[in-house]
Image (cartoon, rainbow, N blue to C red; front, side, top):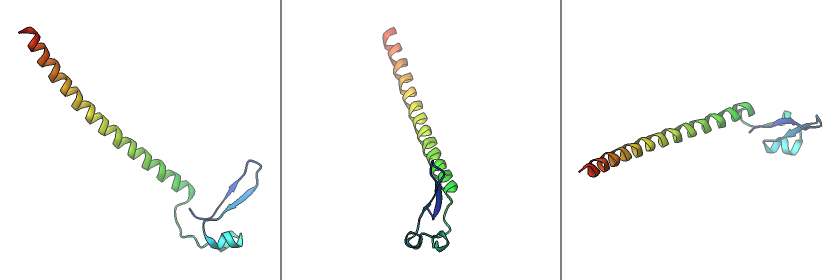
Length: 85
């Protein structure tokens, strides 16, 4: 994440350096960070990645559930046939 400011609960503005230049000088004007994602964009990307991973997991679990239901159905049908005979 590139250099940015945060505000404390007391309302104080605190510089969070993301590069050595700002860490040494304490002045955000000296920032040499690449134009990476903003904090909001970073959070959105993390959120979207998490949602994507969870949707994938849900899909896999639904597929597994369908397979298991099919197996249960086959076993139940087989059991019913054996008990009637």
